[in-house]
Amino acid sequence: MPDPWKKRFFSILSFVLLSFLLVSLSLIPSLAKAESAHLVTDGNSSPIVVSSKDAILQGYGVEKRDIPYTGNTLYKGAGYVSFFYDYDPNSGKSDGTATFKVNVPTAGLYRLSLGYYIPADTGSKDTSIKVNGTMAENVTLAAPPKGAAVNEKMVTKIMLNAGTNELTFSRGWGYYGIEYVKVEFANLPAAISKMEAEDGAITGEVSIEAADTGYSGTGYAAFKGTGSLTFAYNAASSGLYNLAIGYSNPNGDKKTQLVVNGQTSETSLPTTASYTEVSGGKLMLSAGDNTIQFNVDSDQYHIDYVKLSAVSPPKLHQIEKKPVNPNATAETKALMGYLVDSYGSNILSGQHTLEDAQWIKDQTGKYPAMLSTDMMDYSPSRIEHGATSTEVEKAIQWAKEGGIVTFAWHWNAPKGLHDIPGKEWWRGFYTDATTFDVQYALTYPESEEYQLILRDIDAIAAQLKRLQDAHVPVLWRPLHEAEGKWFWWGAQGPDSAKQLYHIMYDRLTNYHHLNNLIWVWNSESPEWYPGDDVVDIVSVDIYNQAANYSPSIGKYDSLVNLVQGKKLVGLSENGPIGDPELFQTYSAHWLFFTTWTGDFIRNGQYNSLDHLIKVFNSDYVITRDELPQDLFTSSKNEAE
Image (tube, rainbow, N blue to C red):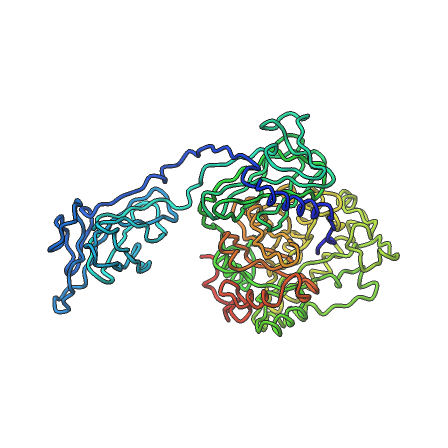
């Protein structure tokens, strides 16, 4: 669940004043100077050209020529594959094709250009392309410039395999010849541009200082109470760019607000006494002038420089369909297989509470694919105060209706509840509402505290067993948001949180034989990660500002890096839902989103109704009616 939004009047005021000043004085183009350092390429930057002389011809009519088409005197080239013919259906042959074999060193996305011959004043033509036997598309060959008969044009982008690929052309419409094909690796990283903080524009209490050692350039921006640091960047082309931030931060983990061309997000700056570099995620920049602004979020950190570089093609996911529990039920294996197959192609829609899921159906015509609910009121210390719950019954019914179920557990502390105004018993999962010391409990297994931990886990096991008996697999997300330390299970730091997670995994899996769980860890911090052997999915909770529909690519990349691309990555809580088109543009392959309850989904500010209708009717977003009917029974989803 989210922290309360903090008001930052001075940051907003400084941003407005700075924007007015920059526009008034036309200063934006000269705010910062970019130093370019050319990257060492890996050989993919050299175009690969295959001549018509090497083409393989099949079928009727197509042939190789080195002389102009009848009556045309402008052609001076070295030869072409001729598509200057009319097909004869009585020939007994298929329509003619020309295949060019292209050998590339690396699989990926490539730009395809054609050198071609069209007689003057005959207009544009069409050709059809197959890539490795699969139809790619029909493309238009634009008429050559006036007075010319040949032209070269980048006609499309194609996915190629490492090694030999076959590009097969057949005539679409009109007479023309193909002289050669050329492929170039797409999305090569551009030159890295480095911008020093001292060349940026500062406001408020941000100052340029040089008292430290280890920074680059002639200084750094010291962030204190209020203010901002702004860079201007002239991008050679529009697209995605990697952002790297050089900084130091000896005073505990911080966050800084990042505003790119008016779009706001948040970036984490982990603790470091020396100057180092951290990824700021991916930015969508426009060709030409862009502004990148850092606003004070929490003070006492230094920004040394930023680096920008064009994004390379994303690596394909390599995730096994096997759950970490080797004894997983058939339903759990089937669901895990489906999740892996969907990952990177679509995003599953999710919603906290059945009541809000029904509200979404009423507003958009669609149920979310995934219902998220909570084991909270099954906690023994809540039951002692009279709490009851029907969430398991709701989840079983949801699964019967074809949906996916995920559970969190707001674990009320086993004992030591303050139960005073502002720290009532029902807030007992918060650190400040209990005296329960998890580190003490784990250090002394013979203690009452440790035994109460086992008692509580056993109580929840009984509820999870009901789901297993009903053949319902569960995405199980215990100890969520531990690194925030606002919940008692994270209050004593990462070691005790990880130890508690391992105890729970062992107790539920090996003692209670609960084999219907897909284990979801909820943190992006390497220090808190409990290990690949006990995690199926990594996740994070993100609450962007109202109506900020960004894809949260920085957090996504952080999670992918955490697990080296070997685990599924989910958005387990969110306020505004990211724009489906931006998810795809940024290759932010979240497995699912799961919008929090109440105002976050209903008040029209975090998510407008128009946005919700767009999201739940997007082809990229999977809703409950789009899940396969044999979701929990199909063996085709399981690992072979």
